Amino acid sequence: MLATFLGRRSFAHYGPEFETILAKMILVSQVAHLARRIAANVAAPASMLASGYAYTMANANFAGLVSDSDDFENSSPTRTRKSVGDSASQASDSSPSSPQGFGESLRRTVYGKKLISSLSRKNIGTVEGMTRGNSSSKVEMMKLLEEWEEPDLQANAASKVSIKDILQFRQAMSLVSDTYPFTQSFGPASTRAICVESAEQIFNLLLSKNPNIQQKVPFETLAELAEGKDGELIHDKVKALVRLFRPDRKGFLTKLDFVTSIDNVYRELRLYRANLSNSQQIDDSFHGLINILHYFVVILVVLIIMGFNNWESLLSMTTFFFSFSFMFGPASSKYFEGILLIFVRRPYDIGDKVAISDPETDTSASGSSTWFVEKVTLYSTTVRFATTNEVATYSNGSLARLRIINAKRSPKAIVYVYNKFGSDVPFRLIQVFKASVENFVKSRPREWAQLNGFRATRVNLEFNFVEYVIVLTHRELWQNVGPILQSKADLASFCLEVSKKLNLRYEQPPKPIHLFLDGRYNDQRNLDGDDGSASSGLQQVREMFKKEE
Image (cartoon, rainbow, N blue to C red; front, side, top):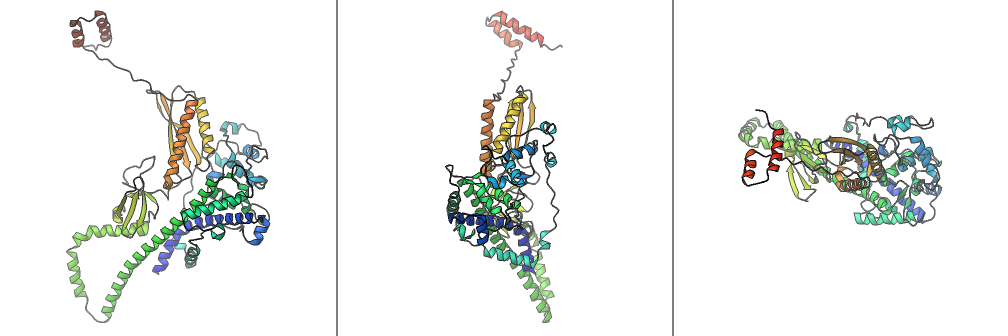
């Protein structure tokens, strides 16, 4: 019973994450198979399907890889004010200016046209332009509505886990190889350096099909994996490939982008296996506590059955321990609070970034100072400060009543960039500045997910400025704060350069100087022999502001 209970908890907590990682591993292995077939000059889809090197997976569920709605369906309030029909038709043209990396196979399908338009559009219209547009323009009503997330109505997942699911989960974990996690076609990946080397080899094999001067692989090459037996594209698989490799607006992948995508999957897999191993250690510790209680009860029952009178000895022991209860009471309470924190709440895993703070105070809007979780036991947690690499240890009981922010389990990071403009700046220039920022964000699909808003937040006429805030959603979580801060710095530098070009730089006006003179100061100047004309002028000023008695 205890083993089944612990197995259900592990499956409910780690099963969905393993499903997502496994889907990514399958895609990487299929890309490796495709590269090997290209190197063997038999990369036709039909021969690949016949030889078993590519898996169509028509009914497969790419968990976590097809729900990135900000790329295809949903958009921010800023991005949604545009006409979709026109941009889709423009992206589907075979003109030289259209994205060439997606290939004709994607352009011929309706889904491919929508995908290409969503990745390649740069110009943003207005609501007025949509309302007075021609009848052929198709407006997606969902894109005009306010952004909203569906609430999670799922029941307790652990109660629906069967023994079959637990056994399949353990068998799948046992089949993941340490040396060849992405199959032998990809090559060895026992360490990160070896994995990067194998990824570079796969990229060079993919590049051999379409060699070019820019050393980029077109997404059309990878899209061959999404073709079914009837030649139709598997939409979910195309989404999964785009979500995993993130091609640019023209449909190409550089070597750095390709290797980075595979490196992210490798790191997720290693951290996941470390978390699962640590969870098993915690379960073993809990199992030991249950065994102690179990054997204690069994010994009592056996002694009672054998006719020994144990109640007097138990009563004397209870009296002895009661005298020390005031000493060990608070410590025992925190001890069990720590066990409940780790075993029931499970607020973090190994490798997560956490921020610990008082629940009665608000957190910073620019992000919190975080600690890396390095080791978790049933009684204590070892963390490392992300800024200085200082290592500390917490007792789990001391963390039970605090607020724990988990950066890895949080959604994508939301970033704020503030800009000040003079109050006399024309609104037309503000619109030009906004359009420049939108194009800057759209040209970096691997960094920014969407532009959430561009609005005025403060109007200060005393200092003659209007403050605007740019709200964006980054691709990364706060778990990986380095790329977030770099992208934010690049956007701030870009805003500064645009402000210089448009002459929008704000200069704070000089503060006025107030002179306060009294009669004694003037009398002293008269005694020193100063010019009387100046004193008479100041006397007039004093008379103007003289208070009536």
